[in-house]
Length: 113
Length: 114
Image 1 (cartoon, rainbow over the protein chains, first blue to last red):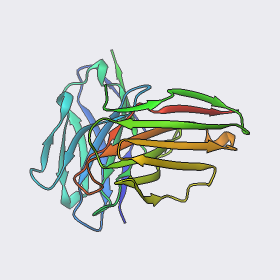
Image 2 (spheres, chains in turn purple, blue):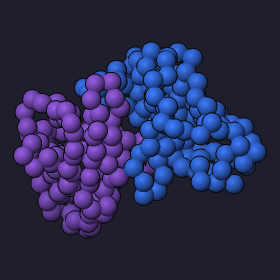
Image 3 (cartoon, each protein chain N blue to C red):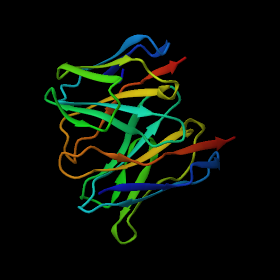
């Protein structure tokens, strides 16, 4: 079975500061990992995905994530936070062949001016 | 324009009402999903359709009834709901249901059951 743990339900950073959102996964098969973002009153939007190629994955809006098998982690980072980054972020792991994604509980990111 | 359109955006219904949520995708995908998003809970997968066939029913109460007439349209029929069913209902689609098929979400229907 697959599962995802997102550490911290709420993260607050200052504008221009580093953003770090943590995600640890558990998977019985080689995982495919995803980060999604949800802005207020909208659905989820794909930020980036790891599919067993490069361990450092670059996504949209300046975000990137690094797959670390030894730590079973897939943390999301951005060097400099913008006000527009304020949203809820979800980590997800594939459930294996033909099994839908398993999502974490989400981390709400606040950006302070 | 997300490629996945959900209507209505907001719905208020009484416990004895019958209503339907609609989802349409313009991406040529073969799989469609219903998710329930409640405050402080992970996204709950409700139903999955692949090539119009239901492949997953995640122990959803029978007061929720899905319908998938073709690969582009998905409905969620609602009847005799409970107040705890109030939530954001998200529709999504993907090319397939495999590991390398990201989901594309609609903006959701905010449902309030009174």
